[in-house]
Length: 544
Image (cartoon, rainbow, N blue to C red; front, side, top):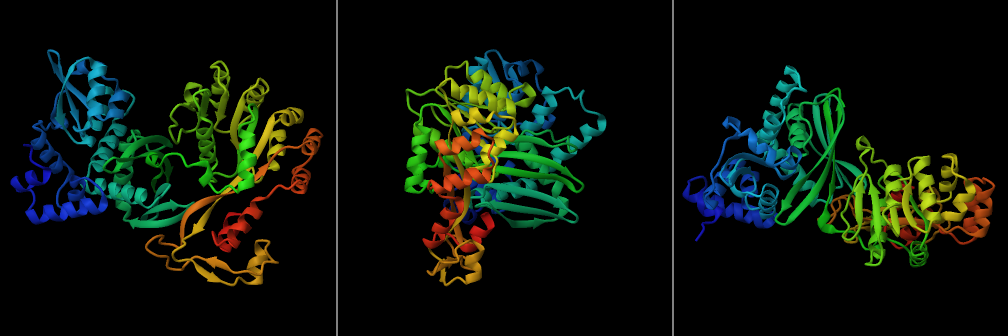
C-alpha cells in the first residue's frame, strides 16, 4: 500500500506529525494540495515536496542543470510543445523514452507524449523551472543572443527560480483567483513594487513589496508564461495555467511592458470553471431581453454590441452564442484573444504576425459554410465591408465596436467609410452596455439621498429611499459591493431611424427618434437599479 505524502514527510524527517496536521488543516481550509500547504506555511521548499513525491511514486529525481541531454531525442517533441506541456525529453533506450516532468500525476500529459513519440514513456522528476530552463538551453542554440543577453537571461532565470519569488508569485495568483479578481497589476516604481487587483472593474492595492523583488517576480511570471526572460526592452505576451486548488485550474493571460523602473506585468485571469454566464442572468430587463432575442434569431444581418473596454461585451456575445448553439447551426468565431472555450463552436484567434487578422479570417470564414459568424471587433473598414457582405449573403454576424451609446454606432461606422445605405439594410440591433457593481445585500445601508446627489444622476424628482455601501463592508464582500450586473441600451432600427441614417444624420437625431419610439437608455436602466436598491448613486456616477 502506497504511503501518503504526509507519512513520507514524517518518515523522512522532513516534518513532524504536528506540522503535518497543521498542513492538512491548511489544505482543507484553502482547498489546495498538501505540498502547496507546506510551502505556503513555510515548512518546506518546493523541491523537497517533489522529493517526497518521487519516493511515493518510485520515480527518480534529476538535476537538469548538470545533465547532458541527448540531442537526438529533441526531434520527438517540438520546442513549443515541450514548453506547453512543461516536459523535457532526456534520452532513449530501445523503445523507451525518458522524459522529465514536474507533475507526474497528470495522466493526460503522459498519454500525449506516448502518442506523439510512439514510445514507451519513463518519467523522471524535476522542477518546472528547471525544465523550462533546460528547454531554452537545449532547443535553442543561442545564436540570436549576445553574451550580455545570455547572461541577463541566466540571471533572470536564477531570480525566477528563487523559492521566495515562487512563493510570492503563487500567493498573489491564489489570492487573486479566490477573490474574484479579473486583472493583476505588478507595477514597479521609484523605490517600490506595487501589486494591485482589479475586482468588479475597480483597481485597488493588494500589497507593496520592496523594489528588489521586481526582477525576480517579473521573471517568475515570464517563465510561467513562456515569455523570453532575456528580453526586457519591448512588450511581450504569453499565457499559462495556474492550479488554484485541486481540479480548479485558471487560465492566465500575461502582458509585459517596459518602464524606467523595470517591466510592468498585467495578468488577466480567466476562470474556465465558471463557464459562460447564462443570458438570463446578465441583468437584461424582461422587455429588452425579448427584443434582443428577436434580433439574434433574425437569421441574417449584423448584431452589434458596443461599449468601452471592460464593459462586458464579450460576456454578452458568449452568452448569446451559447443560447443559439444547436446541432443544426455552424458557428465560427475570430477573437483577440479567445477568452472562453465554447463547445461545439469553431473558434480561432487573431495572429497578425501570421497574417491572421480579423479581415483575413473573416474572408476565410465565408468559405467554411457558416451559418453564424462572430468577429471579435470591427477595427477597420475592410472588416466592416466583409461583415456587411456576409450579412447580405444570408449570414448572421455578431461583432463589437467601441462607442459611448447605441446611436453613436451609426456615425462611427459612417466615419470609417461605410455606405449608410448598407448599414440600413444589414444592421438588426445595436446593444450598448456597461457593467455596474451591485451592493452587498448583507451590509448595504439605507438612507435618504440629498437633492444634489439625485440631480447629479438625473433623478431630481425621486422621493424614495436609496442604499449606499457600508464603509467597512462585511465578510461576504469586503468593500460594500458584491458582483456586477449589466446596464443595457438596445436600439432596434426602424423605418424612421433608417431614413435618418440614409441621409447621413447625426447620432443626436437617431437618439431622439429611438427615445420617441420607446428605447430605454443606459441611464434609465441605472436609475431603476438605484430604486430597487441594487446599486448606489455613487456607482452610477462612476460608470456613466
